[in-house]
Length: 74
Image (cartoon, rainbow, N blue to C red; front, side):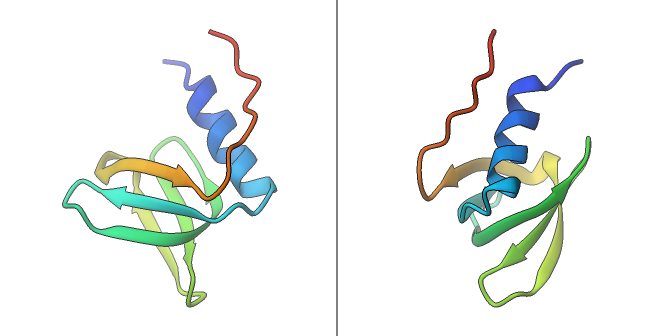
């Protein structure tokens, strides 16, 4: 399965160092920036510079601090 929109969104947030809030499925919010990602996980740097590895299956929502142009076509 192709994840073009997801990959474009995560890559733009990473390259532009946009602060995002990631909400986990248990409701916990984490604010910081995306360092790297692959098919199954996101390497995330919290505001206190602590790095955490988050598995994508526990991510509910990702909200960027500012709007991004993904240029992804359906």
